[in-house]
Amino acid sequence: MTAAGWGGRKARVRGAIRIATDADTRAAACNWARLATLGVTHHGGTWTVAPP
Image 1 (cartoon, rainbow, N blue to C red):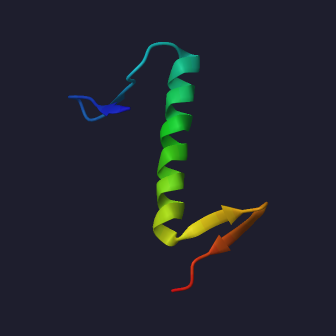
Image 2 (tube, rainbow, N blue to C red):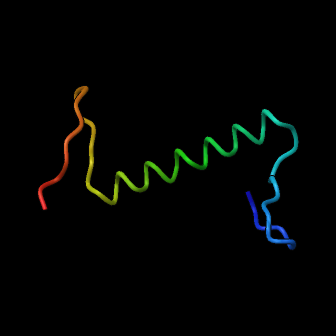
């Protein structure tokens, strides 16, 4: 999504399925970035948190 001139959001792609896919992909990317910031990793089927 990109900012629209009237304060709402404008889809970067056309079509309901593509818009949903784009939103899901962008949300997943934000989630992965947040997990990396927190130091969460995945090894052998388990999630671990880096010590502080």
